[in-house]
Amino acid sequence: YQYYLESSKELSSEGLTEFSSVVDWQKLLDDRRLIWNNKLLELLSDEEIASSQIWTIVSENAPSELIISNIFDHRNLWNWFRLSERLPFSFILEHANDYDWDFDALASRIGSHDIQCILEVLDDNNRISDWSQVTEMVTFKFLKENLRKYPWDFHLVTNESISGTAQL
Image (cartoon, rainbow, N blue to C red):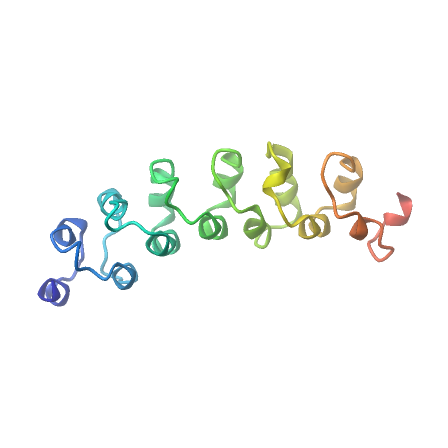
């Protein structure tokens, strides 16, 4: 295994398969020589290898295109917090109700318009836990139009320091 690591310019799933029981996967998944592809994801999903730590690193390091094309097949293994932090917003919006996204993590990287788009397509408001953050992000017009539709943080809504709340 050490010889393979030292002598290889590229690390492929084919070359790693025979060493799978001795590989330090956490270290290897950060190696720039690693070839990310479907076969590697299949190898990493093996019950002897798969763990939350391994799949957190996979969720952080695998190319977005590879994740997107394999998201369904490995849906029980991904770290959804990490994916919510890094995958394209357009993909998450399109699949908002299909996967276990962390909408609080997503909210920390998007703006007012995008969070309003998520709210309009989301089937279950309980999938958002930090309504204080969301309440602060939406426009006053959106909040006013949807006052009864979402579980807003009414302490923030009625605070005089928020522009326009006196009109409510």
